[in-house]
Length: 126
Image 1 (tube, one colour):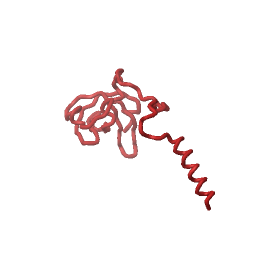
Image 2 (cartoon, rainbow, N blue to C red):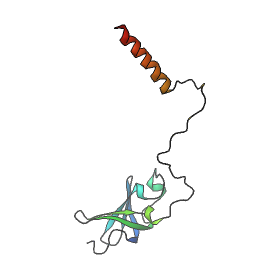
Image 3 (cartoon, rainbow, N blue to C red):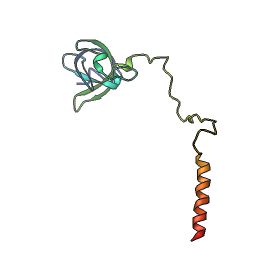
Image 4 (cartoon, helix red, strand yellow):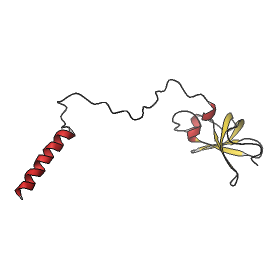
């Protein structure tokens, strides 16, 4: 079965069906695979019908072959260049802080000191 197709291959296929979770693509007369909605294109896809219709010819990459269940996971997105104008998310970046002392909120450090004083005062009264 998977002698024809293996992980990493880029192939031409035809969209044979569309569901809210993805599109079925025929790789040949016998084998179909699923392009999950998250693998249709770069970015968020709200409605797959905005991107694909039954009968479309598409280029897909084989992501996974499950021989036992005869299932093929495919991606259209993996065959496309990612957009260059999207800002990349910065990991481990501290949130920006305001330098406004009159913002109306006490800082946790100030409140912590106040709570410690209150706690020690109530503890000493017992």
